[in-house]
Length: 336
Image (tube, rainbow, N blue to C red; front, side, top):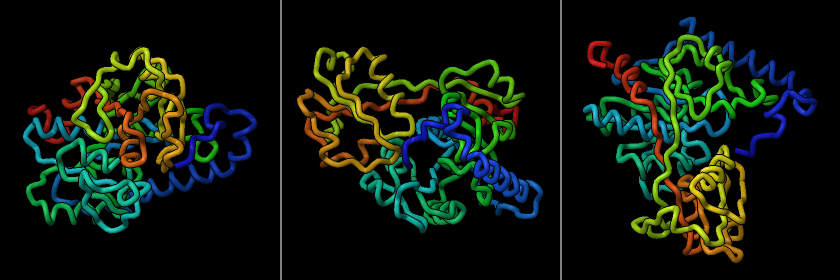
């Protein structure tokens, strides 16, 4: 995915030429949604509950940490979850299992990260219902599915929709390609839960209406060495060093801001497009003592990056009420 266009941030002259396409996109998206809502087409049930974690805007809203949080919470509640995904950026078209040894080129960056972090089955493929059926056929013990993205993939039956919103990602509030929106903000009101990543204005809360919401922050852990994840270092141990940082994610600045919040003085920060395929030259230390990167970037950089490359994992810190809302829809209000 290329970097977010500059005109997505404002409703200035740079975005105006894209408005006709934006209106067409909005019309087609609305018609497609109406077809499924009206019952003209129906998604076939899969035999187990399905939770879709998605967003209404292009760009890094924070879905992957939410998926990791969710499958861990479900396991603690006695469920046996698995994850399905389109595998954006990967070559897999048919239902394909993902392992810790899979590559981003094969199955997409996020699914590899999910497989390494979640300890639950992860499968990808173009047709998510087909992926779900293939997974369930070989893993009959799975009793709930979590779809990483797929909010707009209406052929996939779902029991719970979770929309992750980062207000900064909403940009100018216009639809693609004049702005970042895939669907209008009112679409989030139809979800069972909205997770708000970062600060949220009173105006946004008002526009969300009565849909339940929960706040989320990303909590960084200790760094680990790229070529030896067993080695760990605290952020404090990097203070006073010459540091380089790279980020090829939806919002690279978020990673750089996190490093700054940890008290690190990064002299060389380099942002790349989301899902960027790195070259060794991109990762050269160039005089720095260490290279810092995200877990998503680390999927693609093993074997390319220098020895002193350290990865910063993050976990979603989500209001406890979020799980209550989810369990209420899965089990009924008496068990939430």
